[in-house]
Image (cartoon, rainbow, N blue to C red; front, side, top):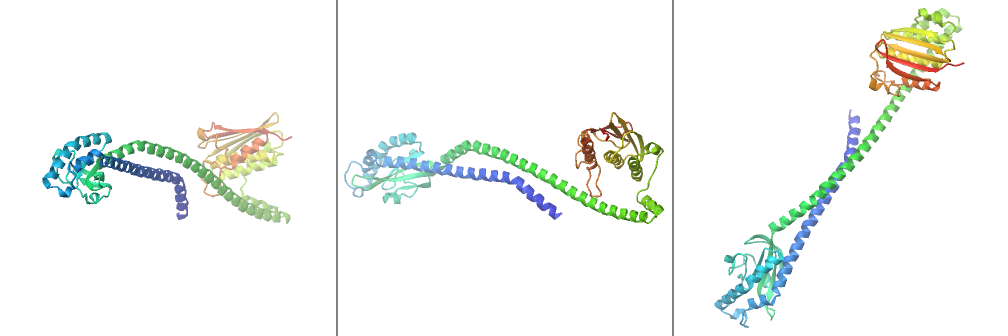
Length: 425
């Protein structure tokens, strides 16, 4: 059992392998594509906010608004003076921030002074307040690009320092896009990519199914060939055993006859194969081969519980090929379960015309075309020697003599085989 399960499991694995490969390839490709798409969206977004922030930080209007009208350094100004500069900057820069936000497609533009107080913000209530994230690094002259959580939520933002004409940092420009927008863009890209993934999956699955079907057909042909080889091997083994037994019996019969023990020889033969004679034996005078064949068939069918009735009307010599056809057809009827078998052989215009009728179960019309195929049999094979050989031999033998054999329904209720072949002259 374990030996049979292992090949079946291996075979199933081979059949499923193309599908698994397709699923793996499509899945990996889709994952890579989605990863590249997400990274591309984030890189594009980061580049956009960074460009907008840098452009604003370098704008003279922004620098002038944050520097104020006084040329003194900011640390020399009073708190009130700096508040006044911030208020004026908010008045001048908020319209600019609104226009840039809409034009660049960003969610916010926040401009703050060097104290971290906002001059612009999308929410009016937030203007003048302190920024919600750390600007220390930017006020020290560094540029920052990354994701932080601010008053509007997590955003991918860029922070760029604003420098005065003397190079001092006088403020910060912060530009950001909400992470929810980035996620929405990714979902949209996923929606565009998904049909291609599904299409590739369907196409790959169909292609792999065709491959699996072709492999399965190949497996079935190999299985059929293996069964035929196995059957031929069993048949050859059985024939060798029968041949050995037959030769042994021939040696016994030869020894009895050579010593003149004819009665003992006949008795020995009778024990091996009981001979039944019939009333038609007188019509078989001069045809010892046909008579012996019919007697042997009567005995063989009697052992199977069937009665053989024969009708012969021929003028030519009945050779071994004709008796082979009759024997196989009669034996097939007995083995099929018939209790009555009628065998007829007639001659007309130099051709033998024969038929074998029985009262057995008959042959289904759907199987009529296959009964003569080698290896086909509707009967069980308890011996293991292989079946489906006799009717194939009949077909080939009749065909070699310019004839044909056909199967139909018998008037007895079972099967009827009729053949025609040339008589030897």
